[in-house]
Image (tube, rainbow, N blue to C red; front, side, top):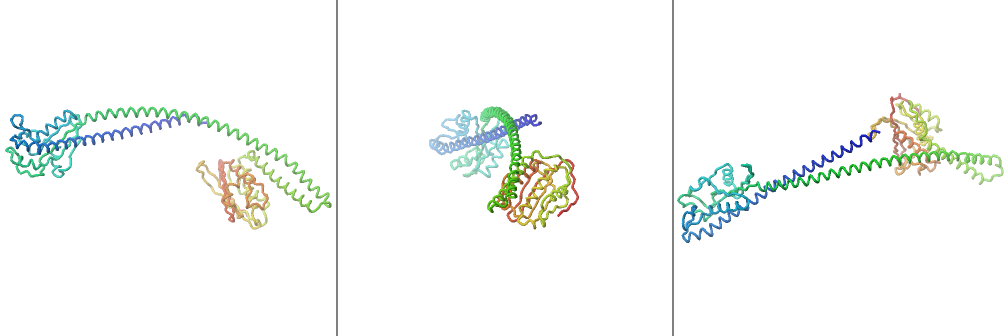
Length: 499
């Protein structure tokens, strides 16, 4: 009765867990997208800075080889202050920096710088190593002149990429640098590291655009999350309603099946009981015929009368089995203290045990609270079957044993009884069939059987809340194990022996 009151709470807990899991997944996805965008920004900035640096380097090389050489042949002066002189053009470095400035103004806002520890006098303020990055770049290129050196940094509230490459001495530039009147160094050789070309690439525009894109992504994920929550709630609510409806239908169907089963049991009981009267009349009539007109009976008639009595006896056994099967749900289930050893002794005394057949009761049989009549029926069926189906009952042996077990499924304590015989055994293919009603096995064809006994045993054990299993193989005997739950206060009995 408590399940319905707790069911809505469990459903809401499940929904909240789903929502939490969804939000965690969405946050993880957003974080991953943010990381990917950050890496994309950095890789794009490095690529753009690399392209700009290469373009300026190539322009400077081309200007030196194609323009400067031709200008000198025509008597033009190559100087940094070309704007104040006639017949003068700018130095390659000066024109390269000017080109880089113009490109930065019209495109990305980048800046280009060319510096070294050996600046010309007119570049003392702008061409030397003025900060830590410049010094680190110069030291790095001293060992790795063919690799770029870059750092991402923030200053004045803006994120920048400072990308530097080595500026090595070209053959066309050695003479000019060594012979210039104002040169700070006159021993240059081809391939020497003469300076650093740096591209300062601002990232604020790209970052702003990325943040705008990320906000759009967050909005999309938020919409998806909201739709997901609505969908989860709708589906869960529908499933809950469906589950309640199914439970209701199952309960109705179960009640109907129980009612039908009770009616069938009652019908079988009435029919079987009514059949006993005509069967008894047939048996009495056959006996009267044989007794009163015995002299006029032929041998074939006597044989048929004997066969008739056998069939009537078998039919009577079958009806008794059906009556017993139909009464299982109505048998006495009163719980009382049962001494299992004494119960077994009473059962054995009521069985037709052949001389030489040994029934061995293990010591330590319990005394515990249970239903006496059902337990007695189970033991009686199993012991009588062990005797009935033994090929040599005068030499047979049965061992009854017990142990305490714990059932994980029900978290309950049980006594597990075992009835082990040394009879013909049962093939594994028949293990499931032996507990079905009206089943007889090949191993038992020589014995008349109704096929009801073991089905009665299983039904009783199931009703009592236990379980029954079979371990057997042809020619190796059979062991039936069944469990009985402990009820109330139980105690272990003393040591009993019987033979």
